[in-house]
Length: 219
Image 1: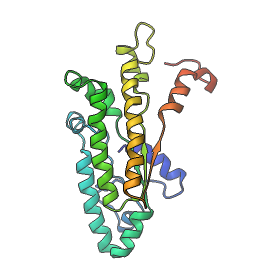
Image 2 (image 1 turned 90 degrees about the vertical axis):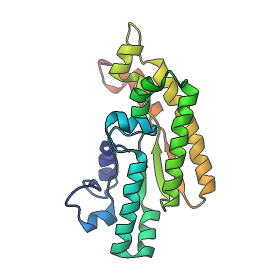
Image 3 (image 1 turned 30 degrees about the vertical axis):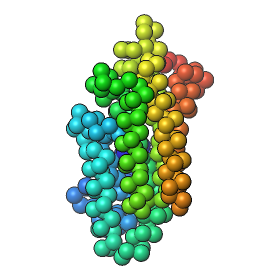
C-alpha cells in the first residue's frame, strides 16, 4: 500500500487533513478510530519486492492491522470496533514496484503470464484475509502503465523512447486478472464491496495525448 496516494484521497474525502502512520511514535487514541496508514513504500504483492526495497511486506502490514484491531477493541469495545471496520474505507495500492523492479530479477524464471499469476496469488491471499478480518469497503488500485516511466522508456522504449511494451503488457495482464479476482472475492463475501480502481487507462491516455492536457513535452 502506498502512503502518498492516500493522503490526497483522505483529504479530498474530508475525513482528516493527514492520515497518520500506524507506527507513528506519538499516535493518539483518536487517530486509531478515525483512520491510520499501514503502508510501506516499495512493498508489493511479490514477497521478494519488500526484501529488495527494504520495506515492510504485505503480510507484515496485515500483522500490524491485526494488532490495530486489538487496540481498537480495547478502546471502544468489540461491537463498535466491528462497526468501524465494516464502515471504513480501505485503500490498497500495490504492484508498481513488482512490475518495475522485481520482475527484472524474476524474468529468467517467470514469463509474463506466470509472473502475473504469482502476483495474483499473493493479492488473493492478502485481500481474502483483509475481508476475513472485517474489512468491507476495499478499493484496490490497478497497476499503472509502468512502461511509460522515464527509466522504462530509456531501457525498453527503443531509440524514440516510447513507452516500453513489456512492463505495460505485464501491467495489463495483471490488471485483468486482478479485476476478475475482486469479483470472485465479492461472491465469497456478499457483504463486502471490493472495488477495482482502474488507473491504467486514464494515465495512459494522459501520457499518449499529453498535448491535449496542456503539456508541451512528454519528458
